[in-house]
Amino acid sequence: MSLLAAIATAISARNAAQATCFSCAHFCDDPARVEAEMPGLAILSSGHASVRAQDGLCVAHQLVINGRRRCGDFASPASEARQPEASRSELDASGR
Amino acid sequence: MMTASTDPAISAGPSSGWRELWSKEDWWAIWIGLSIVLASFLLFWSGGNLRWLAVLPPRWTDFSQVLGDLAVNWPRYATQFVFWLAVFSAALFALGYKAREFIPAFSLLYLAAYVIFVVGQWEGAVHYNLEPPLIALFSGLLIANTVGLPRWLDAGFRVEFYVKTGIVLLGATVPFSLIALAGPVAILQAFIVSIVTFAVIFWIGVKLGLDRRFAATLGAGGAVCGVSAAIAVAAAVGAKKEDASVTITAVVLWAIVMIFALPLASRALLLPTGIAGAWIGTSEFADAAGIAAAQAYGGYAGKVDGITGTADQAVQAFTLMKVVGRDVWIGIWAFVLAIIATTRWETRPAGSRPDAGEIWRRFPKFVIGFLIASAIITAATASYSLADYNKIAVPGLIGPIKDLRTWTFIFCFFSIGLTTRFRDLAAAGRKPLAAFSTGVFVNVILGFVLSVYVFGGYWEKLGQ
Image (cartoon, rainbow over all chains, first blue to last red; front, side):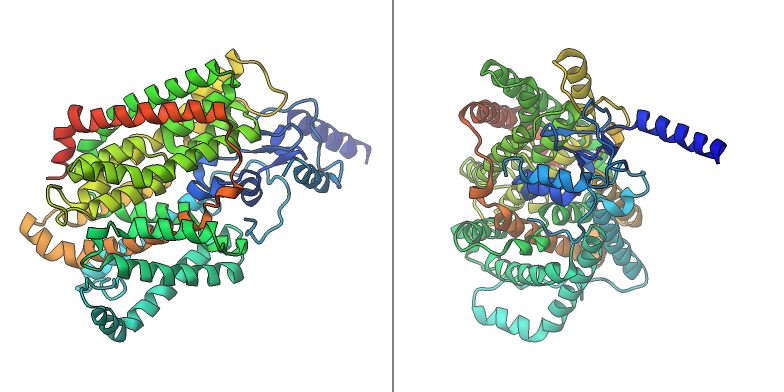
């Protein structure tokens, strides 16, 4: 148990250290939600367009980002099961 | 607005390249468009054609002609409706939309498209500027901003999806040699205008006190490919969400104005269709809006005294200028601006970092479908003389594809109007609108000079 657990912990720690905004609980890249958050986006573009690549919204800082960095406010959704719901609340409370 | 059926996790994380093949609408536009092109080719090769499916309302002077056509051809219209419904439903289901929302929305859209088509086919329509793109847009705007429609119907009003499918089909009507010959001219003209427009908007924006990331987002929206460019650059530089929303407002407002203004100005100046198409391709902000303007102007060919050229020239010149000249470079714009943002501008707490891989990831993939469609039809007709091409290939192979393309564009134009709810757009603010509008002014003048005086001889003879 101890060896396997140690390996799993090490892998988990490494993954956590390497994680970027993509895996942050504050990151939202759902096309429908992105379209809803930016009114008019779907008129002459689309949340499903290739040009959007894997962009998303940082709901903590209210930024549009490509998600390839991380900051001190990183929150792992895996460690906090409630985070997605929290992030939705952040979106709802973000002035819209 | 929220029409997707899934209630997904906040982030799906970075997806693999393969997943894009069914999770991005660009690829679905390619699958649908190329399937139609291949079906047309195979039927033509085996002695048949797609004409039965590609039914259009007839030209008419007396409304009884429309009723007569409907009495005879209603099974063809019904089959075509089911065809479009099936292929678009499959795609949108894969993208996460509910069939029960898409089906009624698309049914309404098809019915409206038929009515718009009928009005546009009236012999007197051109006299009253009743070109189908303009009717579709204007009636859609009127409905959306007066009585309105339930928002869940937006599931069927997917502007970009329809226009991308139409552009892939458009590839079948553009010879590959034309793309190869005209591409460099389009790229040069677009490069000049894009750099100047971006520089003007960015410089004025910064001078007016806007954040540089905001100014860059505004500049990309005006210089490259409208809303899509604005979102891509906003993400690359890490702009504020509200700044991206303001940019969207500026782009949408000016794009709508230009759909009407550019064809009317071109008509007043009696510009040849190829030149007008190039000007629209240089100075419109979005593919869907530009196709509407170019197709509207192409409709004047042969009907308005003094306007020379063909309807195809307007759309082909627009497509070469906008899609080949401007759209395909968005990945490079985003990458370069990301480098500048992270090395020269103040840091932001979260999110964006330059990544060369984004040049490919952001590439508008539907352009690949456009090029493949062109290559397929060019290869299939390579052995034909010009006379045989016009007598055999155009009616049997290319004509049906072109008519199906026209339907997708009408779906697109009406959807632009129906989804443009002015009251929903973010308030633009005086400074951003001033910076953007100045860029628009410079863009339109420079685009006109380049299209008419510098490269005018080239665009006028496009494809001839």
